[in-house]
Amino acid sequence: MIRKGNDKPFDLGTKVEVLVGSELRHGIIRWIDNVPGSNPGKIMAAIEFKDEPDLQNTDEVYNELKHFNIKLNRACYGDSETFIQPNITSKDDSLLRINDDNLSQSENLIVKGIVKPICVEDGLENICGKYRGIQGHHNSCYLDATLFCMFAFTSVFDNLLFRPPTEKDCAQYEQVQRVLREDIVNPLRKNVFVHANSVMKLRTLLEKLSSVSGLTSEEKDPEEFLTSLVAQILNAEPFLKLSSGQDAYHYQLFVEKDDHLNLPTVQQLLEQSFLTSNIRLKEVPSCLIIQMPRFGKSYKMYSKIQPTLLLDVTDIIEDSPRQCTICGKLAEYECKECYGQRGLGLESIAFCTSCLDQVHRHERRTNHASTKLNVPTEFKILQDHCPVPRLFLELSAVVCIETSHYVSFVKCGSGSEAPWCFFDSMADRKGEQNGFNIPEMVSCPDFPYWLSEDGAKKAESTDDRQLPEYAKRLLCDAYMCMYQSSDVMMYK
Image (cartoon, rainbow, N blue to C red; front, side):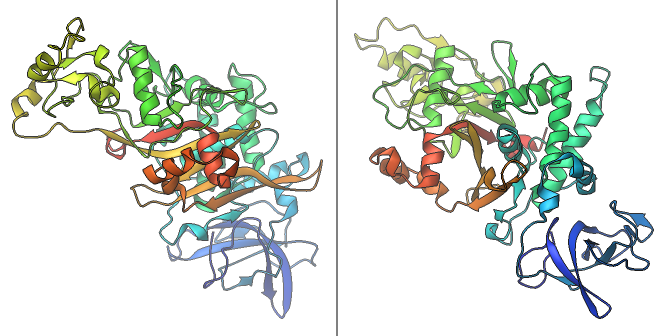
């Protein structure tokens, strides 16, 4: 994407006008990049002319490098001062329409190398709007929403893009990895747009190589896509290591419905699920994908769930130092039967020796069976000199579903002040049977409010149908929450 002054950004597929000699020509931007050997800060663009007389000595070659495929004498190069946008600034229809005739054009959209996640230092509004994100096609929303969450604004999953192949990988490993990296992730990060044909290349490979059928045309769930791509084909190391000895790529919440909870938080449900399942995480994960207690569009345990912005995982990590729920000192015992009696969540079952004895003198708790915790020796030595650390993961994205259609809310950066956006790969459509979907990104400045205590009170007292559109989608339609640890990411 390039800019001219304070005008709207130019990106792939934008219709522009170029002054060639003394004549104004109409064309389409087909390529944008830095040119090797030139000023690193200077961005160049290639414009393909359509239905115009041939221009002498113009083609797809610049600085002796071929950048895209067109007919001879149909292209020119320039920077943002060379061309202007006409009053109608829509994407080129032929570029966005999905059919066999333009399938080869997706080759022009490949971006090689290493591209960092999208940066929003200049303001989120500058990159939002229609024709932003991943273009949907043929029930691809489950994949579009998930990929956007995983790669647009974070690098936590980037190991999937660069891990060298091993003898355990399938023969097509590098091909799948290259398509994911160069056809989807890099164009998304560089141009804030991915053509549906590029996504179809990945879907076709997944259909061929994985055990999940129907990936090129049928409705699927995000976890089926993750199983197909991450587990089976890319053979990635599982994101979660459980105390049971099992590994997993995502965690499904298993809880019994609490009729007293009108608006449960992800924090509450996660701790309840770990207590019920009697498991712990063996280590703090760099990413934690949590699937809500619902089954597609057919069943929701709770009408609304509030995602937790900062997830406290201190009490679900095996052998991690924990605080006594009474005095706050280092806990040495756990009593599951005391759950919820002294405090909230899993923190309420951790006790130091003296507080455990005091609490269990009561006649209602004398028969409780406690378990001794395995406290790291080095922390026992330091416990009088430093407080028990709390371990947190930050919410990075929420995938939502309504009537079989997946969309997502994504954090556009790291830290508590980072803005949020809403993404829909099929927000609009142009044409009917032979038309195409138009993806859209929308800034969501109210996102943090609806995840705050004040927002929870408002949501709890408001009928679902009366909630603002994006608040309703966030709270009522949450399907999967993605969390990450910036600290752990540095060591992965």
